[in-house]
Each structure stands twice: as structure tokens, then as C-alpha cells.
Amino acid sequence: MTGSTYALFALGFTLVFGVLHVLNLAHGAVFMVGAFAGLYSVTAAGLPLPAALVIAMLVGGLVSVAVDWLALRPLRQRGTTEFAAIISSLGIAQVLMSAGQAVSQTQIMRFPFGTFPVVIYQFWGLRISLLQIVILLLSLALALALLLFLFRTDFGRQIRAVAISERTASLLGIRPGLVYFQTFFISGALAGAAGVIIGLAFNSVHFLMGEPYLLRAFVVIVLGGLGSIGGALVGGLLLGLVQTFSVSYLSSSLSDAITYSLLFGILLLRPSGLFGKLHIETRVVRA
Image (tube, rainbow, N blue to C red; front, side):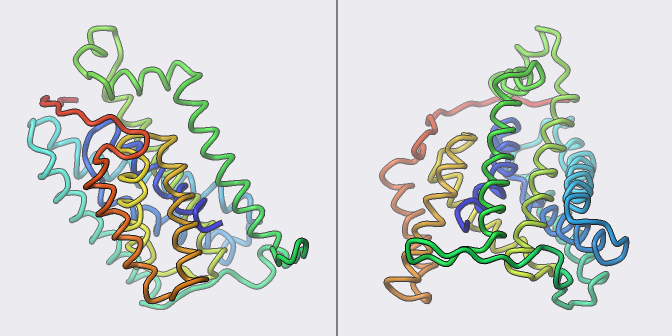
């Protein structure tokens, strides 16, 4: 379950990197906004959880598009470096987190009891809740849907074409601006879904909840391969297993040390990750 939540968070993160070749550091803040949208849909609007999940995905997608239009698109039009885009996304992330802090009054908020039924299954000596099973299946279903969208639809082919070469894609009649809109919306929708799922799993929603997952997303995308969707899924599951076994058999205090040691080792031994291809590309992006 832990690995699937990491993978779901990292999917949107690596999708933007794969297309724009920049690290969107506002992804954690979008994740937080989606969690709050799902929470208030349940508590304030009284909507059922499935509807709250859909609203969280819509809000996350729209906020992610707004991040692109406000923080990244003007830089693309000027042909600035990737470093400027990283700093710009970090700045808008701070704005979103400050807004979340003001709305929540710096409190940890929780979904009401009974939002999801408490059902426990026991078999093979394991104690597993229905929520854990649903989280795992939902995360895998969303990841599969993303893969099918990218590799089985015309819009997905356009996204992959722009990721390879924006100039060539433009000559083929593809509109890069529309591709960027789709990419950021999908990325934000996945972040919103991950926010609700993780908020339910740990029954905790707060304005800083996206930061730890953003750091772990770096490990996931480096482990799986920069820009690789399948790699993000496998990397998230592997990271979840490593963290869980570290806590179970060693010590919880060593969990983060082992995680980032894994990142260090992958960068030294295989910089391209498990499924990535190491290449150097220089280009000017305009949309």
C-alpha cells in the first residue's frame, strides 16, 4: 500500500518531467490542495467519497494547469533555462502552502469517522483492511489508465511526440500548448487523487503533507528512470517495500537513511535508473 501511494504521487511528477524536462516542485502543493478539496467535499458539502475523489482530481488538475500558466509558461516563451522553471515552481508552491495554512489555521484535519467503512480481513497470518486493498487497487487502476492513455490514444501519442521533439511534433501539426495543458491537468488530477488516498490512509490532512512525498518522489523517479511512467510505478512499489522492511526488521530511525542511501547508490551505479535512458539534449522550448 505504501509503495502504491508513492507510485501514484510520482506518476504525475515524472509525467511533467518526461514532457517538459523540468522538475515541477509545486507538485507537492497541488497534492495538498487536492487533499483539502476532497476533505471539504465530504465535510462541508456532505458528498460521498467517490464524488469527493472526482472533485479532488478536477481541482488538482485545474490548479496544476494554473501553476503552468503562471509559473512555467511565461518562462518557456522566453526560452529560459530549466533552473529558472524550478525556482518559479518552488515559489508558487510556497504560495499554495501558505494558502493551505491560512485555510486550515495550521491544524491537522481529518476525514469524519465512517467516511470509509472499517472492515478488516485476516488470512495467512496477515491483518489487512478493506481501505488498504482499495488503495492498492485504485492506485494500480489509475496507473494502468495513464499507461493506456499514453500508448493507446491519439492524445497520448501527441504527448509522447512533444516529449521527444517539440519542433518535429509542431511540423506534424501537433499543438504543443494543448499538449502542455493536457499534461499538467493529468499530472494534477493524479496528485489530487493521491492526496485523498493518503489523507484517508493516515487520516491526516495538513498544509505540509506534500513535502515528504515530494522528496520521496525524487527517489522514485531516479530509481525507476527519469521520465519513465512504468519506472515510476515499479520504483514506487520498490521504495515502499524497502521502507516497510527497514522499519520491520531494522529500525524506524534508519528508514530515511536507507531510502536516501538507495538514491545515492542508484545515481552512482545506474544514473539512468532501472528503465530510463541516459541522454543529453539541448533545446529551446517555446509554446
